[in-house]
Amino acid sequence: METARRLAVATLLVASGDIAWAMLWVALTRGAGPKRVLQSVASGLLGPAAFTGGWGTAMLGLALHVCIALGWTSLFALVRQRSSRLRTVVTRPRGALVVGLVYGAVVWLLMDGVVLPLSRARASSPASLWFWLQLLMHPIVVGLPIVLVLARPEPSRPRAAEG
Image (cartoon, rainbow, N blue to C red; front, side, top):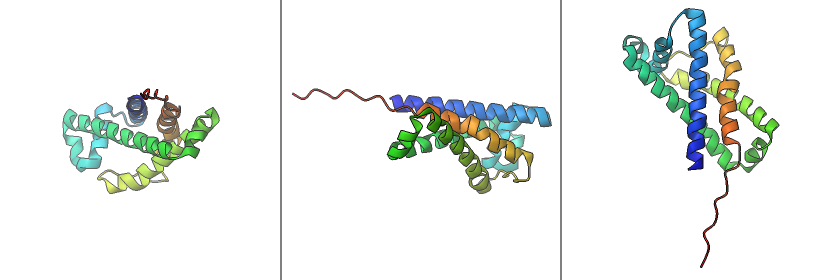
């Protein structure tokens, strides 16, 4: 149960931090509101039709965003579980910091270079400011929360008395 709770906490931190950052940036630079940002997430599945679907497609975008956050969080949890070296590294504060920052950057590069091109959404050009801001922010709002929440060793379970 502890693992499920940690996955949920990390997922919610990642999903809320990442979408809040995107909403703030889009509001400041384009004057668009939260609905438009969430519809842009849904456009990965629906294409341009997502922008004409109102709050229904915005809520679909939110659900997709949370699922994506859960996916990246679960992937890290799985790799951590299978790698004794990674478990050792992330138990130290400096190791967790470095791994979190690197993991967040990797997540953005894979999202923009693999996931978005496979969807109906647009990938960002490496020549765009948005690409570099995302590469800067993902380590902070994605990688660090995942690693810091999941880094602690699982509490050991008491063994049942044999008898």
